[in-house]
Image 1 (cartoon, helix red, strand yellow):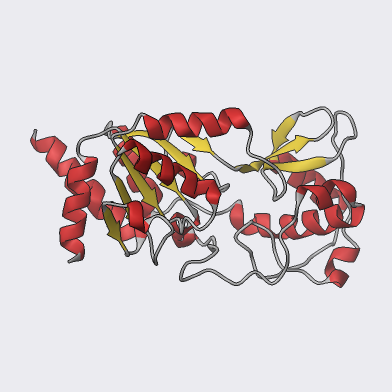
Image 2 (tube, rainbow, N blue to C red):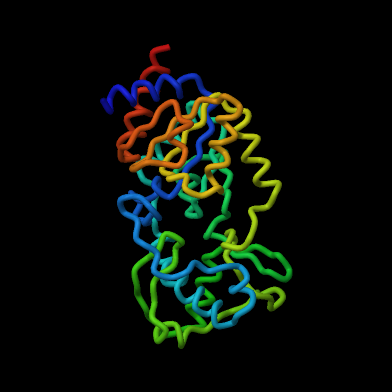
Length: 279
């Protein structure tokens, strides 16, 4: 049955003009845990909100200590077979754009070019005062220099931080913007923030201009991603979903496939590459 479904999926994608909406499930095979799928872990702590981050030095210390530890895993993650297959489909001219809910940069690392990071990227840091953006690698260098001998480890969360104790966090020292001394924040959208409207509009435009919407590794349980599926459904655009487990968009999909992303997308790319070569 799975082979038949992949065949149907290949027929949809072969027409080109595909908009991809990707979620955390696409990156689990790169060692990054997801939120609700088979490898997801129940969140035991409240996620950091923008209001808490800007309003509390203690909250910022806790966030950056946890993120400093988590970045060791996130920053070293490499694209998996699913990311590489999506990039190959883009190179073959079948994908019109990729909207990703992920903040890990793995689509780009795999070679994809037309990527919109809906929630931003952990590989960048922004100053809340002067708005200068700098590479995360530079911040990590400065944090190591400010915290000689500080070591901690903990379970990695999907957001890219680690679970640490209060004792582990207590001795961690922060650094501020090297240009103006302002507060530094990862260039991602925190809870309590809104995705910039121009970015949302750009995502809607990609979906509205597509011939097919392909959802990869997203449970679609929150409005952030589901709104694009809803838009496609209203416009009569066929929706195909590949995810491990049910999703909030299944009722609107013309095709759903509950299967591992890496193997499924590799199979899909191989079928389509062979088909294009034969034309």
